Length: 185
Image (cartoon, rainbow, N blue to C red):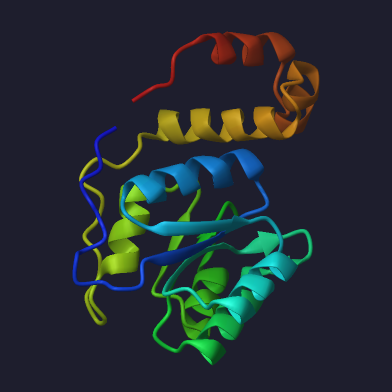
């Protein structure tokens, strides 16, 4: 997929911290953001993110809300304590109004539900202060969001079809048929 959003040449510090405990997602997002001109540090725990914030506070951050060892909100506060102009986008698979409000109050510039498109993330990070990013031109269809969720759970279950079906409360054969098909648009 061709990138349409790159870090502008006038932006001097292109360092981006990605914090997500989902390793496959973190890797894919890291690659996508590198292709968009960011210098990526990708970590999987709040503790690692705090270390990055202390050693070299990035100009940008994409943080997962809920992690095994804490909350991405703690990292937002640390980033803004060290670098008030740091632009943070919060990601979560558990989107609701209360967590969105908490993220914005903590200093996030935007709050996106997973799976989020890398172009939408880059637009949110690079939007001018006070300017809202444009809504996505081609939002994912409900079928695509469902497919992405199934793929994520399947990866988290180590590609175990039976375990994935159990966690999704779905018949195993139904899941096998879904996994055999191509991704919807």
